[in-house]
Image (cartoon, rainbow, N blue to C red; front, side):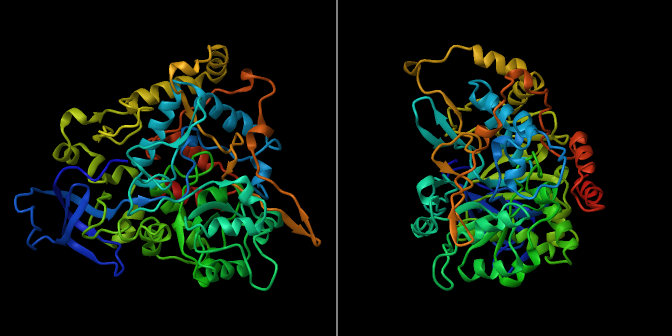
Length: 544
């Protein structure tokens, strides 16, 4: 992530602050310098000190805080949407050896891409850019392993919650050590260490999914291994009576409605969550069974809310992608709203009429006209990017993006894993490799292994595939009929290895960057069997 540095500039438009009062300035200016917002004011107000000669750039639209996503398995977002073949009761039923497609379509391809010295950087570049062009400025990060045994989080242009490099943005954890998942008491001790934990909770729709929530209950009345540091992801298996437990203990929740509906035919009981006062944020999960990014997930959330009886207003939903996740991470003083002193993460969408919150949810990816992270313009229309970025830093003409868009992926602090790799070159490598997965896998298997003396060789740390001692989905022992039933972490790769070898891998298509430019994604979505009647057609209408 870039340090606090960057150009001095100002953007004019309708400013949707997402502050505590939900102020909207119909004609306002956001003044930015050195990666920080200096002032947000009506267009007629005096500029702040230092901005007396700053050129004010008309944005031509509505200005919002950058979108903060609290759940996404980013590396997998090179893979296309899966045509889900049945309605699954829980995560175990579709994510392991019981589902032969999982190894062919998910874990097998990711092993090939994640360990290849030329393809791994292409994955990192592509999926980060994909988040960016869908309005996401913060997401869960990408973990890397080296052949020397080191582990670190990738630092790129999009912020990640696990490695912020900023004291104003406390780092969260998204994995938990096996020993801390051994029982509820040790899990509670881990929660009490003070860092927020984003962990999958009650994934599925059956009793087995809920049992993993009930395993958090400690001996004694009203004692739970739950604190304000727990941010539960999905929570689809919870009953209405469970949400007050989360709320009473200060926990919060990440909602991924499209992924839930595609896999389970239902999503979390959001009406019960709201009644209980549980704070919610949004996450698009991954492209295998979800949205391409938060701009799409906001639309799915609106439809799911309407189907549940109109639980949330459009303002509530925009809160879930801006203000709410910032509060949940304890970032609200620095991100999640447009205010003086906040980090300059900003997006602009076309249009400044009608309801300010509906404008964002209604926006297609082709309506996204600017994305700024830490004061650096990273993506937008050529007109705005030409005003804000030197021409030699821009990448243009990338297939899959709306016409007239430019990217700025240059970083003074660029991670050496990706370095100067362009998005176009990353897409070329991945398209070729996925189209010939058997050949790619076979070449990788026959390639000589680099010696340690040649320097560290980084690969994707795919915790969902290989045991690393730090799990995304801890399974505490279940209490059934008065006895403890061990239920350790689920590692998909050990179950879903391809015994047939590389030839078992199919040819795959690189998932498109945006929904408006990806007809295959939309056709697949329209044929999904678990979506409620009319949902796919309504979502496609919102996306295009």
